[in-house]
Length: 530
Image 1: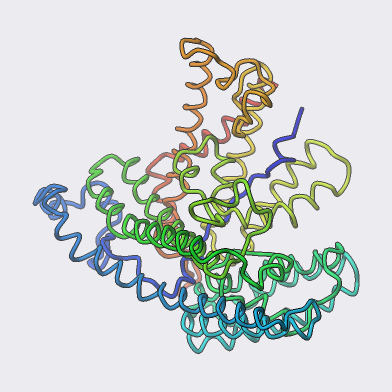
Image 2: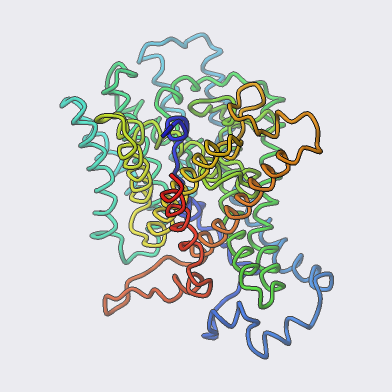
């Protein structure tokens, strides 16, 4: 069995619900169904009773557009502009100050000469966070100080880095349980702290691996943790990447073009999330899958919205991502946090997962999947164990949210089963059916490959296309099925200590848990034919 798939790119996903919460408390409720009158959730999906039925037939899509424009689209865009503009301005100030300092000829590689650049990033980042979270910034500074103390564990060697990772993730649970469990504002801080934890863990492993000379001084550490390009919404960047981009090098014209493109897509996705997706869900009527898909589209659009904002901040500060080039950078948009086109029309669950959060994928692959896989002898069990450990760590980084745990573990099962089945079918049929994108006619090792067909009349070519199209449709169904449970508030513990699960599982119950049956079925089919 060839596990080259896992060696090249592993399967996991990072659901950025915490990053959505970290987005300055933006209200994503415009145009979305509210439950103020105690209306049962099922009424919304099945037509909303007599009153909902009457309201639905009051006007068609064209008649409702002016009302949606006035009551939803305009307020949403104004709110986003009020939030995004100061962030972009602070990143621009940071870039200008760094350029001014560098051009005065005082830049060198010594710690003393680099200190002003770290100070500029720290000052702009703290100002941005104060604008985002207000007085709660003091807690983030306290946690950053604790993180710097934990870095001293690296004197123990490789075990020190592993201990740092355990304490960093465990501390987030401790804060949530003992301090912020009953506070409604913790999810917003948790998203910011998750990015800080990822930076801490990567810093620890890079130091132990020899990529860095020594523990950064406190000013360099704080500049890295609170760089304005990544402190509020992420994404993760390594300390080496941060240090290499302290002085901007891109042209202003390229920066302007990429910033405008990201800003336009940001406004478009928030419009879809707040207004168009809820409207399409209303129009779905009694078609449960369509309602489920459009509600999940609202969640995905919110993720794209945060991703485009993060990309704009990266472009303005000229911050590059790790492993740049190829799938991680676009000529039009610059560094890519997500690839919506590969999520909405995925070749497989695995490609969908890799495109959801590209920096998170790189972080998990570098610091979790690869160390787990290289520990012990290479075997199929070791590879699968590394994949599931990767999903587990991705889940734990999000704190205490049962929905994310269930979604990510389900994704691990679905992606592993699909990739194994498709690899086995590819070997048996000598057809390009694997979960990865076809590398092209010259590199593809299968005879029945669409890129090798010289004519469109080839029957085998069309059969391969049809099979891959079926797997794409299946991935879209899984995407809607798993994504819809992330819509709305997270699970909360009631006064009696019981967890209200009805709203969480209602969508899956209504669908008969079909996606889970299909996921298990793919694994059973793989075991049968192998």
